[in-house]
Amino acid sequence: MSELRVLFVSPECAPLTKTGGLGDVSAALPAALREAGIDVRVLLPGYPEVMGAVDAGREHARIAVFDPPLQVRLLASSLQSGVPMYVADCPHLFLRPGGPYQDGALRDWPDNAVRFALLAKVAAILSSEETPLDWHPHVVHCNDWPCGLTPAFLRHMSDPAPTVMTIHNLAFQGNFDPAILPQVGLPWSSFTTQGLEFHGRLSFLKAGLYYADEITTVSPTYALETQSEALGFGMDGLLRSRSQFYKGILNGIDENIWNPETDPLIAQCYGAHSIEQKLGNKIALQRRMALPVDSSVPLLGVVGRLTHQKGTDLLIDAADDLLALGVQLALLGRGDSQYERRLQGLAARFPNAISVSFGFEEELAHLIEAGADMFLMPSRFEPCGLNQMYSQRYGTPPVAHATGGLRDSIVDCTPESLAAGTATGFLYGQPGIAGLVDAVRRALSVHRDSSSWLRIQKAGMGRDFGWRGAAQRYEDLYRQVAGVKSQNGEPGAKTG
Ligand code: ADP
Image (tube, rainbow, N blue to C red):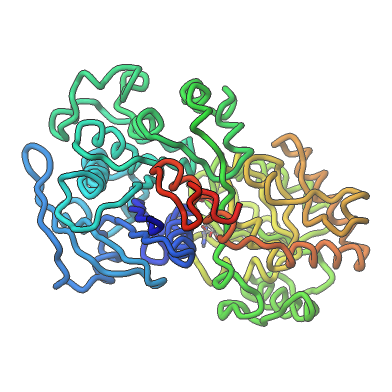
């Protein structure tokens, strides 16, 4: 048997619904797995954007879950990539304006525990004897805390598929009041430290980490960091105890969407052999952000959530020192209101050097990647991070704290790596202001030497950040956990 069937469960999937990297991964990884010949199907909640992409007539089954029962319609459609999609349609829980986890004012939905217990339960049903479908997955792949209860539910069901649980960010754990347990049909006996309990709370993420057959995270360095007290968010002991079932697989990026040669969202397309055209994007970005149009001033770009994790406060505190280096800063993000206020204050103080835009703007994100000279990522921790890979691809070397996926995807510029032509960016060791400013200073000194800079740009643009390698590693893991052999008869050894 060679055809491998995988149910990929996720609370978000771009472009239908995305709050960050998980949305990108949930679109691109299944697409890459399908290209590799795997029968992968994605299960999503029926948010308004998802329902808008489904032909309402395509109902496959009706399922009642929990006590008192909630009715779920299982709909079928497909993603843009052609990957089949199942939708758990429960309007009462999912059909509401706002984000997947929060309302428009960024407040968590008060019923998130039930909402994602339901998603996890539907996934478990589809991966067990109870499925109403004639399609039975060999593996169910669960992503982040919203899917964490699936392996726990499957413990109490017949003919369960093996489970893979992926951590995209250990800081988000889905810890709730355990009073929900009887409603969702999990026994109180499982509410112990050897099970679902995490400091008196019902932890969806812990459930996944405890009960899944295999655990992955999105970079090898983050897999190590999460086993340390400093970045383990209280789960490090559990992860250490399961280390033999835990590994990091670096995310890829969608190289079609993030391709400066064809990107319709940037002002001027360019490639490694026409890199001089990149300048058109810098000018467009300076105009768009109302900064003085000046090709000679180094322009630093930032895109991302404005949070403590992302080091937004460090960036704000470093602003005076950074500006003293004679740069401009273009920032796009949204997040903590205190950071937005402080950034607004900086932009008002330095209108000729700092410009900020608060919102989620796909087009501006692309223009910053293309138009900036360097891309800053002062994250305190970063499970994988995607922007540093986009920026390398766009010839915009990243300056980043050497943590998690940043460390695994950026080759720091040293005299040796520069001479070898492998340097693609600038990494620094401590997540503080001094390290950040120093790394930017280092980058600027290389930037002044245009031939060295070009080497770094081209090395980054030439790297393979596609999903093929990661998809192969996931396939190997699926085959191993499911005991399904590949065509040449070896579990998980199709191409090595
Ligand atoms: P995280 O998932 O921790 O937020 P990642 O770097 O893994 O960070 O992924 C973030 C993704 O979301 C990237 O595709 C990035 O471009 C995008 N993104 C983040 N903030 C914004 C924003 N304000 N506008 C547009 N895109 C954004």
